[in-house]
Amino acid sequence: MDLGLQGKKAIIVGAARGIGLATAEILAREGCDLAITARSADSVKDAVAELKRYGGNVVGKACNVKNADEYKEWLQWAVAELGGCDILIPFASAGGGQGSEKYWSNAFEVDLMGPVRAVEAVLPSMVERGGGAIVLIATTSAGEAMGGAQAYNALKASLVTYGKQLGLQHGKDKIRVNVVSPGPVEFEGGNWDMIKGTMEKFYQSQLRQHPQGRMGTPDEIARCIVFMASPAANWCNGSHLVVDGGFTNRTHF
Image 1: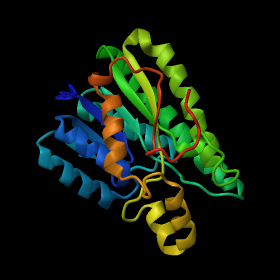
Image 2: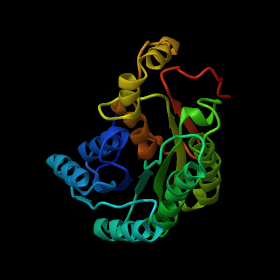
Image 3: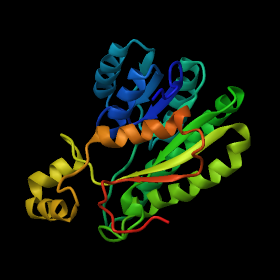
């Protein structure tokens, strides 16, 4: 299937590792020009070098999404460097945690306001270019009560509603907005890799709950995200796609 991505300009927030990097790599292979960021300058530099192998224009600079002014400046820079934006995928997350109010503050600034600020930054370019695609990244923890009362779960859940609202509001502009909720994903240096090393019994209990007896891989999630961002999914707007290999028990009507 031709995804129709050749020559598209994509901004990926949080693309130095895991699902974000896997998504950027597929987009690069499909012929997209990319602007990427992450907190670590070295990680961004390495990711840019890796993605340039596919022949497209790839630019990147480190940025802390939690710093609103720095982040807005980076977004403006990314749009200018690419000469516009056709695709936006904001991955950055503050992660989970219970207890202190700092978890709520961090999740609000990164997991919620990160996507909101990115959307506001790229919308004018997408309108000018006659359309675009935005894919917000939520989580299966948003749809089921997993892991106790956490800011991460609650604020990721808000993205499902926000995505639907955006899709309805900007459909007239030919801008599609969809949400993808990944299930547990394991990769070197990721959360589940660390849990495997520090909480072996809990890790094994999660594997036993999974129909396939394993965690997902970044590439398995990334392929679904790229499809939703591509013209091949041009009739998907305001949708919420759960990609978890059947891990969650909820029926998604």
